[in-house]
Image 1 (cartoon, helix red, strand yellow):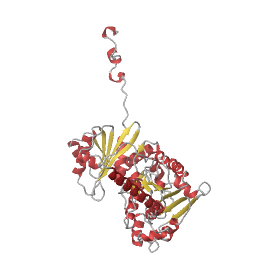
Image 2 (image 1 turned 90 degrees about the horizontal axis):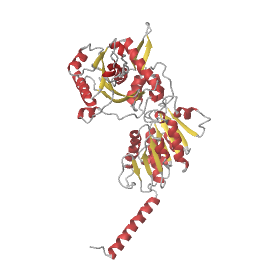
Image 3 (image 1 turned 180 degrees about the vertical axis):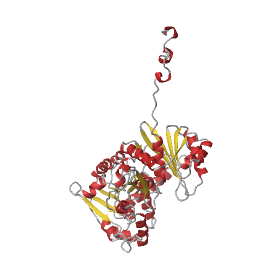
Length: 484
């Protein structure tokens, strides 16, 4: 039945009224506070001296080099949220080493909204994106220069700046995205290696004189002046006592060189890339995984305290990509590890070789694995010489740019925590920092080492037949033309 003219008119005025209300909402401030520190307090927090200094900083370019647990993420979340609520049509992007990390800060901002006691969003929050009734938007964006370059933004927060891949290209793209709005940039992180743009900005007074720098160490953030509990700090200090470089980076928020680290942080960072699709232990167990390719596996067996770990690398051309790494809980029985290796063998179809650390368990595990169907398994006894050979091969492959893995803080910490010292016999003795593990590192190293013989072998005819027949040399040649 056709709609009557009266109903059409009523519906038109209703839509017009709704549109007018939306316009008025966009023009009205969403909060009463006009001061960011007062807004911080309204959310239920008391800003520290260094947080207030950052929040009140009106500089266009800001670098925050703060220690862990000092309240950096909270301060940045409040600063971005305040601008979104008080500036109509404000657009902010959160960028981190991975989009998952970027989305974590957007989630933190979303949780802060519950403290406001009013509805300020335009519809329900979306994962990684918040749209406000005044037209403002806060969004997590991928670490991709091309994506950033296509945006028009008022503010960009580059979180964990020291660990961003292709940091210079990304920063250039961000500057373009901010150029039309004369927008602001925040780079925040604990220090990483010196071969980064973050280090250059923090130390080069000539090239980056426009940056306002904020440095906060654990000393500044100790209670009552900050959120770090002294008892917690002492626990961390004991864990880091044999790793002064990491303590200096993480807690003093200063740059350090690890002279006794076998794998320098710069080298580890150079291997981080997206690479081919990875898979999880659940993918293997559930049967969702079905893949073909050229795979190599390393297994490091843990006894009581240590964990058993399994690593899978895929060889593509001359490069090796870590596509799976699984660490089992301590005291996991070896039969579970054997079962997992058998499932990997079935799902991946083409595991070329499995190297298993048999140190401390004799040949029992490898024999049992072989009997269970793992005909491609081989035991490796990790003597001092063999350990040096395996780690040296891993390091050379990394230096030559042939080893790649996605950003995995736990694995990267294990790699940077591996120490070495020279013995009287001239061999290297490896160890890891007290309170850390190196099971995943050794599983990874074994998988890389397992790939070293993957080179086609050339077999000359003369080596197998002193007098080869023309048919062997030229299979296309008709028998009638053979010379007898």
